[in-house]
Length: 348
Ligand code: TXA
Ligand code: MG
Image (cartoon, rainbow, N blue to C red; front, side, top):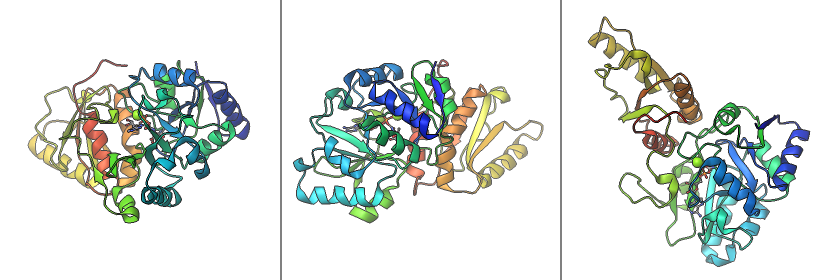
């Protein structure tokens, strides 16, 4: 069973030593908890895939603690000068933060970390514990989200403990992740700059800095990054997704304790509850949850996975969810809800 650590210096030092020894450490970042191992140690990388039961074609994100370390993992000289300047501008302004850059890889990064791709995903997280850990480890740290493949990402140490507790050596408990959805993945290695995964940093913020970028509409395109496979962040419960304000009140055939409705904000919930009691005056309303009482997309992102974890823990079988407004972190939230759709799964 994993040893739980706190965020005091001695504990982080112990975790850093474990990383250098090829062990696995789950640690908090501002987005979600990561499952960390030394990025240049193939045995550690193999253990990450094994712990996650992750198909090895899925490349990992390499985490660094200082901007100066970027050139140790990415071969920036393979980029045009213009592109190098953009990378510089992004790193200067948006790192540390929830932004992952896809760049040509350095030879020091094993193929196992990148699934044989010529590119590497690099991120400089903003969470002080993550940075302290990587700095003390003194090596780049490969870290996918600390969940079994296909399941919800963890935003609390207890989520990791429950899902992977018997497969990691240490878990650092740094409380709840502030951002709550994974980093935005931006590919700078090709001819066009493309958002491969919407995430904790908005497209608007990126474009305000470097101009228009393309993005992949996962509902129409062929999946290229494994994060785009459908049902990739799924809860155990079946989830149906509706437009904002359009969860039908008529779907109440299931026993009510097994059904939950997930609303964007309080306004949306109260409107739905009013419709429901008008339609079914004699029925009790089903279980409901609200992503953000204050109608803030930041707050909605921070609560999303935590609420889905909670509904799974409550044994909910069917979740009816609505999309959130499509601005700021909205696309990242809608993307995760979209990927959470599908049939109920066996409990994992
Ligand atoms: O916020 C995050 O990014 C978290 C925390 C722990 O940093 N990490 C995370 O890692 O979400 P993971 O492994 O669950 O997701 C990595 C994503 C996947 O969608 C993967 O396909 C993509 O990054 N990726 C990694 N390397 C890539 C590459 N060379 N080219 C294209 N996509 C890549
Ligand atoms: Mg993941």
